[in-house]
Image 1 (tube, rainbow, N blue to C red):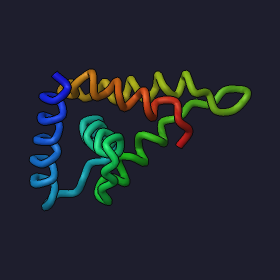
Image 2: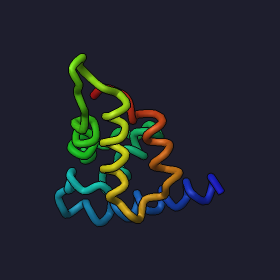
Image 3: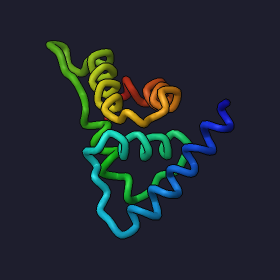
Image 4: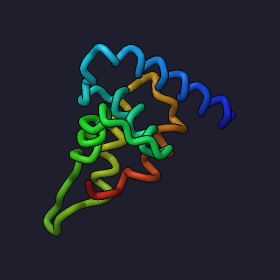
Amino acid sequence: MKKNTLMAIGLLLAVNHAVLADEKVDSSDPCTVVLCMYGKLQGNNQSECSGAIGKFFSLSKFGRHGFDPWKTFIKRRDFLGGCSTADLAVVGDIMKQFGKMRG
């Protein structure tokens, strides 16, 4: 299952890269953010993903006492949920690694 998921994500990234080679990356699109954050999770830092990764980490919540990791997690999870085609396991992996991290 995990191998199939990784192969599907790899294929999506390859197709996405070919399509986006001539187009600007929409860093505010949740699906773009999912693809770029999955790449970051796998150790691939593409320069064209810097805006999308920045968008993810800009989604933060602050309370009376400063940065609130739990509310930040919820805000980021809800944003990534805007990509209906994203694999929930991939979104879960992204959120486990980066969901509460202060950007």
